[in-house]
Image (cartoon, rainbow, N blue to C red; front, side, top):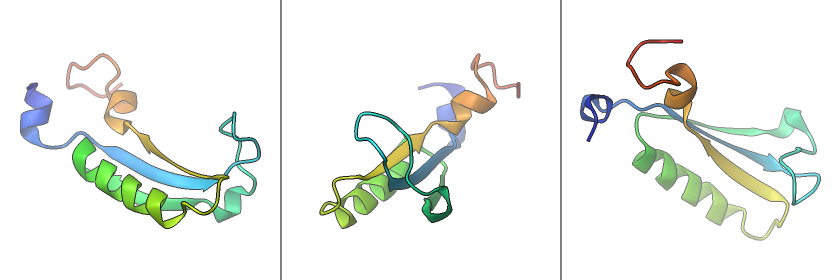
Length: 82
């Protein structure tokens, strides 16, 4: 377990929306995107993602995603921004 994992804050963002094409991440209407929330770890983000995905199971074009924000904010993993 890394030092960042021990600190307990590896930011993750969960969002979703209807796709134009099931083979691409191109959304039908950006104004209707569902910004589910920010989570301090992957496990809690996954719980939120799974709940939203199950709520929309009848809509084949609806997709939810988890973005690992901590990897964008700290791409080299040294604990420093940028």
